[in-house]
Length: 157
Image (cartoon, rainbow, N blue to C red; front, side, top):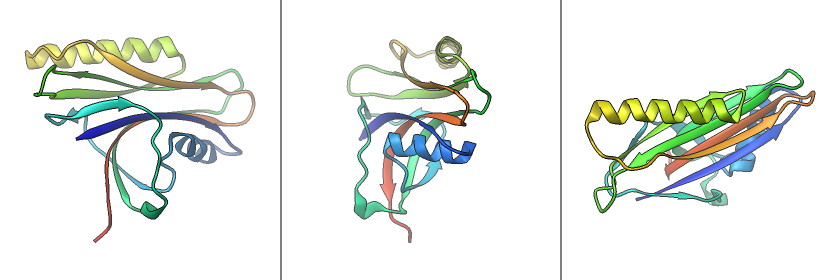
């Protein structure tokens, strides 16, 4: 199984429009997003690359782990990040975490602290922490940032 980690930022006349622009930049704007908890299935390969949607999949369900942050005040930051750990070799089991904040450093610190806690409680060696963070500063109009791990899409019915 391949999991694509994509990211995007956007600006718009409203916070929701900014969020939609960030989804567009991440390549997932035409799906119905279904959020998953943060477990990476055995055998998964995680790849950081822009997600490219198939036009024939318009309106399909897209299973994702997603971090999102919005900002509306001039000078405020919107930072979203996913962090993950994954066992080496064929096992490939792992964990994702979604963190949001107003600075890149805050999000990165939260990712590391959260994954350190989660891996310690499981008693497994998941390997080093990986992360992807997107951020944008508000210059007057609302802004949003998303980082999204795309598992798969499915049709309705």
